[in-house]
Length: 322
Image: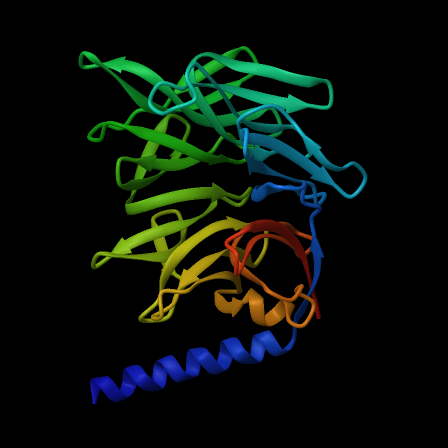
């Protein structure tokens, strides 16, 4: 009886998701790709501007893209976040270009050029207005360990957990709320207090304090959102994956890994799962497959990474239309 009810529930969810999917399709814009490199998009802002990094024979280089500028190659190494205007944040590595000898220094790229955020070993991962988050090495217990950090104009705040050690921050909203992970636990930080959200990682927080990431349940990574400490899982049984980005309303983007172990770019509309490869067909260039959605904004634009049969990667900007 229980098995029958479960199958009925799954069928209802699939039918609901399919019905939602019929109402939408996606236009597709392939971002330009310089010769001989792979493109790895990481973030999208409200104006449809993107950032990430390029991987080529000489290593990684951060990039900024907009419809007006095209692809702008920045300095080594990687950009992970972008604010509402166009400032990108990430890091540049110094020293021997072989881990663990490379030392990352957090930096940002504005229209005026590159600027350093921290003089120590650090990585910037997210930005909102003048707020930047990431991780910075802190000397603790006789060793250097990474801790989540919030950088503001003229001020730096290290975020600590009462029970867990190493950590990193991925996202921040305009109200100084920060999300990330301490070891293997997602957290939400507000007004100096870090709330443990359970096993998993939190990657982004919107201005309504809704958090997105993944939760580990019975050893499986499930795409998830949180509002306060209330968690909502976003995948059907048998799937795993991560929610990587969200907008201010009903859209959550990320990826799922199906029972066949295929990684597929995903969009959740009011909690219902959509396969972005299906929504973008036949507008997706032949031979390319979308593996992850890394950004989504209020205009219905979705930034995705795609791969072809040769293993090459590039960025695609989708637009959700009814």
